Length: 130
Image (tube, rainbow, N blue to C red; front, side, top):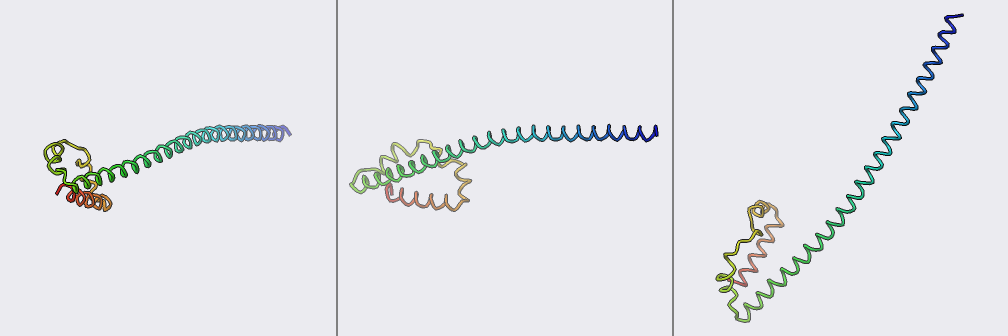
């Protein structure tokens, strides 16, 4: 009887310990879930902010492309009207360093879109300055 009572008591202790362990697991999971949810909110906010920045940059790039095209056409019209655009370029502008065609850009020439851009640019500058 005494042994049976001890075994019964030990079973109760084990059940209690298992219940405590289960409660701890739930608490840990709840804590992890809250932490994970907070981290996800932060990541989502960062993602939203980065998307807005990308959109602004894309709009700025498009605006710059339009301005470049307009300026190139302006130079072409000036050349067609007989102004010495090529001479002015050679004398005043050609030697000014530019980062547009830097070594980084040369590495991008493997990209077909970049090669097409360079061909268009060279063709237009040849028509203007050539």
